[in-house]
Length: 435
View 1: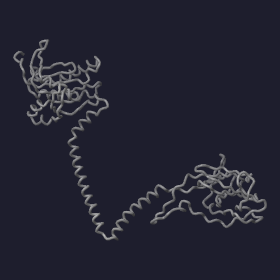
View 2 (view 1 turned 180 degrees about the horizontal axis):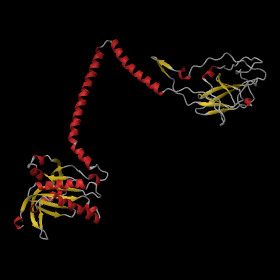
View 3 (view 1 turned 90 degrees about the horizontal axis):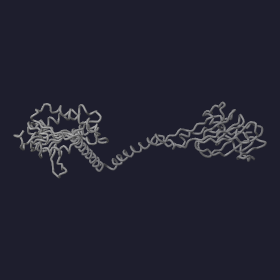
View 4 (view 1 turned 90 degrees about the vertical axis):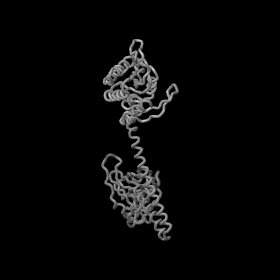
């Protein structure tokens, strides 16, 4: 050993267990035992005389006096062993590593064991301090030496740039692999996972090529589109006034057709239906058919005696709480049946270019429920809505103002009332006329 007590150049591998000092004593013992087991496996092929191991407490420093690539081989074996066996263990064993080629002096420690001191080991520790969990970093001096041994070694590294340590010393570093390559996601909760970082870095150059190819493709397509637009503009300017009008008409027609289709889809509303319903849970009367729309409408003028009152005559005032009219001695004969009203879904429709556009949708229909003597005829706005059966007659109506007329064969007069229907509500009518 005394012959070697001089300054020599050797490769130094410095290893550090991440967050070792934050663990409890039992946790530190567990991590250190696992670390020692993996390190012993990694250095088993290195001759004992070619290596010196220093225990740093939370890691280790290994000096390789023989081949300089021994440090690289041990680091790779260590990382692969941790990746395969420790990735799913709790707590994970996270190790960062730094390699340097520099001058060291071989000495003996206080126990008489071989030891090393010098700038070579100090720089290795600084390089290790720049690494992320699971990453291997090397100094510029080590990269220059090992990359010239074979092209395989040269292709393993990528340049990470220059870093400054706490002593304001610049270090150019190269990486083998990428930050947090195997268990970084277990070490840093909430940060990007290690495998994603590896994939991101490895595919970085490939994606750049893809983006560049896509960019050139888009640029080519944009140029072709620009030429087409320029050709269209030139053709427009060169065209006769009639052809220009045809061009403009074609574009306008396309937009008009699109607007019409949109209106047809979103503004169609079904026509309200007439329904019969009982106000009580008892049996319900059948709903009148569409043919009921063609029944006779009440006549507001003229009287004729001795005929059955099947239509509403002209109203007169009635002394009840609601507006009504009665005649004590006469009835009116219904006039000629009213023509069937046009369907409300097409009454206000508009036809353009052969396409029928329905009217805008109305509010939700309301209803009126008329309770009266059985056989009473009900008219709304001059149109028959059927007769009252044993239960009330319910009629669906559009919101707004309506004229209600009631006649009965046993009554010499008719009842009229102005009603107001609200959206989605039912108006209940039971006049004194029906008592």
